[in-house]
Image (cartoon, rainbow, N blue to C red; front, side, top):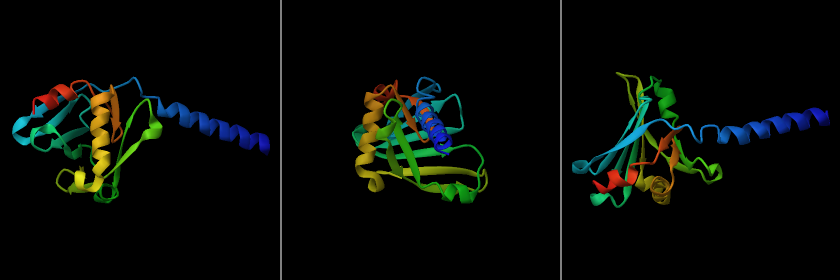
Length: 157
């Protein structure tokens, strides 16, 4: 019994440790587009299932909201159960940031959009901003984004 549980525990631990870095160097291609009139950065990705809109206060000094737009069809129950979005640097899974989100369900397209607001997330929004400014890759809401171009797009706001 001890041998079997030790082997099982080892396998689970190994799988957890290897899964966390499985996508560390495999990033979807994405770009950031500044929309100065709205104080926004839009992501354009090659996977197309999810987009992000980063909203800033005047001049791009403070991140005030992130919209996570999921283009995959889902149900209203699944959308309503989406309460948190994680953000982390691929090299430091232990320093995961959790953002509390509210959701909107589109019954016509059966899609879901989650919104993380500064008012619900305070310090965490600053931490997300710091990740994009200092790291090469940021895993946010389950997708690994390249942070390349974030600062220059932000400068355009």
